[in-house]
Length: 168
Length: 243
Image (cartoon, rainbow over the protein chains, first blue to last red):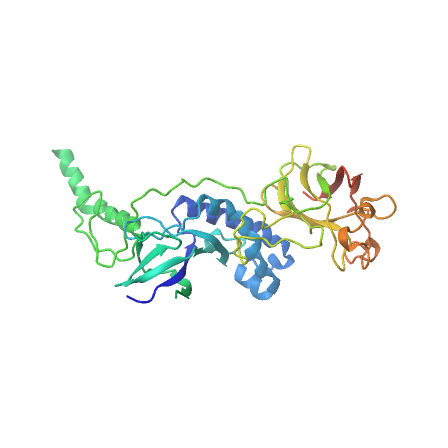
């Protein structure tokens, strides 16, 4: 077993027009509606209806990411600080988060299908006890007991270790 | 018996493939790799491969409900300190005899007493506080009289600009009708003088006449501001837009 470390995980959840879950669809719809509102703060938006083009031509337009973010705050709150989708090996969501970052990957003023966003969830600190095959053995930090309750979680796409702090 | 055969023929043909499609669709959420099933099974599939992720065995948690953008609120103060100010904006239609525009979206934003704008939050800053990350920014929908009201604080100022509030007006379907700014009266007895530029005073202040936005005239952008520093201020303005 390796040396214990404290890690923060990052799960980057991609949502696009293939979304089927209600939460995902709400986030997609409302961020698209807000995108269409906010993009009109930029005079060049008519000329460059595609988000990528607009950002390329108008550097300040990068700010649209931040301007659209508040459209999904309510949905983030509905998660009750638990990262969606990522399950432990018992099939339960278990990663606590407080920090997240919203970004627009692609969008287009006239084409809803092109709207694609990502939310990166940054976990609260967890103790990483070791790795079994492609599973991480993790425990929420702050357990003062001798017996520590743990989670086993499989490595998977869009899930990463965001930061690491080696323990003494 | 005839019905049974009919159902069977369906199963062998098109139905079996659609069942398989359904199964793939369901699993696609969890795993990309699915082994093919024989096609005679109906309903649930049991096909698995060694690399599959664990299926979700609990409910989705609190069922998601439609939530408005957090811009949508009447009180945009978010704990910012300053003299209380109510803002009343009436929208009229210059294409329709200046009649009230109902159901228009009105976004406003302005700086705090020190002259700083909020970040937008939920992004970039990775903020933990969901509520106060976009202070002094709000959105309301006009009522049948074309009016929206906000509760805020009297804005401070920053270098290069006179006291102002940004306004963006959209029609009910979200098409931009006007991006503009509200100007404040200056001179003896005005709210601007009463507030005194907050802690900064007026050293280096830009007055409307030298402001690069307002210097071309403020007759249409000038608000009426009443009140005092004890009871707070009330700002009102009527804006005509081509709706």
